Image (cartoon, rainbow, N blue to C red; front, side, top):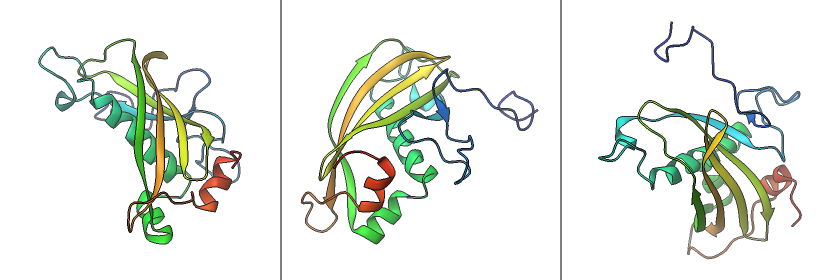
Length: 168
């Protein structure tokens, strides 16, 4: 048994229609399919909860940030590399969030991300936090691509734009 309570090597299955970050996608082993939601597994820790014992509302944004970061890593584009190689960073400029349920200490969750639109210097992501396939939080997150030097809008790097397969 591992510390997760599952046999060594066992893992929870993602909700129906969600591809797990650890699944194979043919060539590029371990990379999720483009155009399908990417799922990042999470567990609720004491530090994530408030005095009522439920996840503090702002922490759902942290969970979604982790999913976006893990999506990039799964595609071999780590955030530090974007900054180093292209001189750009991504910042959240808008977050529309609908809260539908509450997660509690010890819950096993999945944060999903699917990029649905892109402009010259911005991305729009649809994200959710799920427990056992049930949506607890749904969000649309707008991200701006900014030049590290000067914090002005910058074109999304071509390799990331190609990977997203989104119209430019």
